[in-house]
Length: 580
Image (cartoon, rainbow, N blue to C red; front, side, top):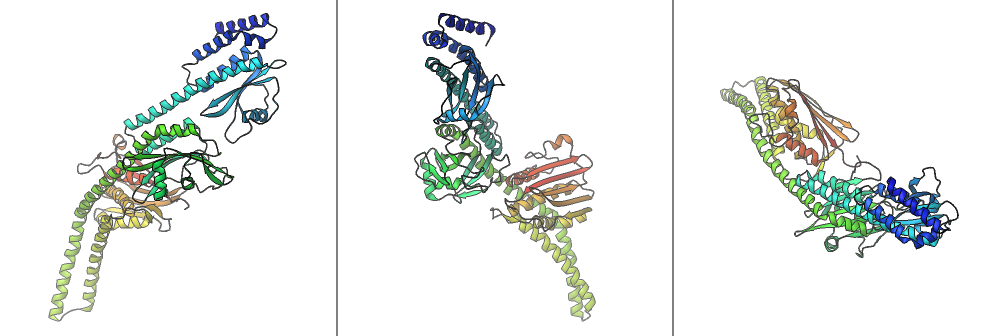
């Protein structure tokens, strides 16, 4: 409190206590003083955005008006019976956390007369209490009634702060939408915002409905219970036609797990969804500290049907309720736009990928035409010579053997080149499967190896075949290698060394493609992964952009190091499937 305001309150307290020997009677009779103090407090805190500042101010005001010896803010968490002391004035005051927790839980506990409670509600449920301890004797009924008014004012101020925070988070997400941020960035901005508003203690996720295989795919998940990166992104959950109807029918669904069994509290009478969304493999029992025991999910609809689901989960049953369902409903429009953007982005990237593959095929055809023509050109004279020798009856077995071996080598070269091109061109299967990295590298090099030799490029390959398989689209992984090798080849017009290596790392495999070529200028290195940016006059500017898109789809990472005149190194981290 300010000096003049604090002095006025002390004067009021002294005046009232002088007129009556009892603080209790004075505040029961002089309600104007109490209302005036609370009105000033509410006015001072009207523009405060920090909940802690409001609670500290309320506690100090209570200590002054009721002449209490000390006070505290006791907070009761989900699933706990012992209160946490978030604030104590003075800090050295001693409090019985178990007693305060029992009072907040409504347990039949004998409360000491020297304690007085002002219960606080937040997010639709009992949240905590301001507690005062009298200097002597105890507080009267009149004082307790007067102190309860504090709760009304504090709850009003806290509700306003929470509402302002919801508007702020929605505005931040809207700005991300206007900035046309990548869908994944927008997803996690949305989940982080919900986390700041609900303080969920397990996880939140966004799932996209795939009508092609009737499944919900986890496209983003934020886990707080373990503070680890989610391993569930990309996981698909099959959705039955009956469950689809449930998701289309209800605006929000809520479930709690007690004694190992799911129950619902939103009158949906359908527990299949709770069992479907209980997908974390770490725990499937309410006894585990990692289990999800309370779930709220909000389906997202469009005119075309089901789009996805927004989900929030907590560790303790009963810790989610109407506040959370109402909150999620406020973010459904942004979540729907984010998921629609994801679909459009994936479709656009797929179209660009197909276009780039066609361009790459044309480039490959031009690149290998000379090698194939030379191979066939060397074979034709040998065939003609064999025929002449056979017709003239002077065929030498040894000479014929040497000629046939030379022909075989030329034809094997053509076979490898055309086989690699055909493998690259087959792009009908878009489903992920187990792919061996060394096979993708071999397929790419079948196209490029001969041309690299002719160009004077020393090729060094160390990709162990024993590396565990990756979860990927084989053609995409092969194109990733083709693009990186092609870039290195173009950077070494006068020859050099190209190194392709792979090794196992804690979270997956690291693929490294290095060259001793011309390198990239520092000002260009910042933009090199942007679509349509290229440093080559004949380039499309899509090669590295496609590489980045492929790596992102695999939940991996791509980094480029380069020095002008010294060469370039590209490092790609590709994660293993869960459980590898």
